[in-house]
Amino acid sequence: METDGRRAIFGWAMYDWANSAFATTVMAGFFPIFFKQFWSAGADTTLSTARLGLANSIAGVTVAALAPALGAIADKGTSKKKFLLFFAFTGVIMTTSLYMVSEGDWTMAIMLYIFASVGFSGGNIFYDSLITGVASKKKLDFVSALGFSLGYLGGGILFALNVWMTLRPETFGFADSREAVRFSFLTVGIWWAVFSIPVFLFVKEPENKTAVSGIRAVRAGLVQLRNTFHEARHLKTVFLFLAAYWLYIDGVDTIVRMALDYGISIGFQANDLIVALLITQFVGFPSAIGFGYLGGKIGARHAILIAIAVYLIVSIWASFIQDKSEFYILAIIIGLVQGGIQALSRSFYARIIPVGKSAEYFGFYNMLGKFAAVFGPVVVGGTGLLVRFMGFSADIASRASIASVSIFFIAGGILFCFVDEEKGREDVKYLEKNS
Image: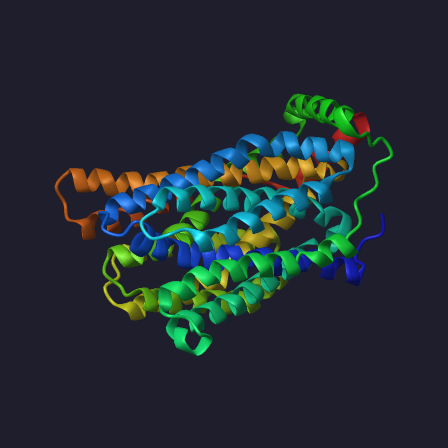
């Protein structure tokens, strides 16, 4: 299949532009704040944090449980785009439905958020897997970084508009900022739906001469999944990378999901935290491209290790901050590396997996990423509850909870030091030659 076509690369990257609106406005931005102040009004801050962590964990478990099998079925049935459409549609519908949830109804808000998160994360399995049919190996770093870069820009633009709506609700005809926030969830769903169109128009499904359909695809996919487990002894580099990725991306995702909740818990104003998130978005736009370039110069492996080290420093520093200016500095630093570590992890992994099984292997990739999203928020919420139970103040409990994230960067970084990309490529060649 021909790769590196401009239209296909554009169409593929635009899905990052589309669904990043959910990651910014909903997941990292308004949902944690609105959940605490509107849907969980009157609840203890530690309890609402635990609820939010549990919601993220449930969504993560759901995707993690389904990802490898769905990926294998998609490979056998040539249905990556169909699965992508299903999950994107689910995410769009559930996100727009948040507009209708009334004050104090935290259970409905949690349920819709879980399903929307499943749509977001599930769609990424098949979106990520399509990169092997869009970009050649020499352009993987650039194309992956382009996707994340457009994601930061697109998500940041809509988020900036939504923030403006909440700060000046009368300008847009809203009664108050709460009505503007609720309307923002509606805009995310529309944005996600409209800008997903290019990926379905311009990206072709990779050819599969042995493709089957219907129940035969399900059976063939499950057989392929079983065979992959048997192949694991020849792909030790893949599974070593996945173990490292599981740990360090846990820290990244947890900071994304829980940072604003942490800021509120230690007394910062919601508007200050929104500004910090916007800083991260717009710093992340050029930085993701810059990291793609850096990966081409020094190798994706070294660039990822640099990003892990930066995150380790951030997670420790964050537990000591006292002033909002420090929060802004941390936002800038995170923006410099967040898109880079995500983009280069994706392209690094794409180089060491069999191309013909990309959806299945990206199913494992996203499965571990989602299991990471399970443990991270639970560790953060659980650490806070434990420290509170021991008699310490809510402020100390919140600071201890964010410091606990450093564990994941330390363990993930150590494991990643042992991942050898060249050996991974040799493993794949051996597998394809003997299969």
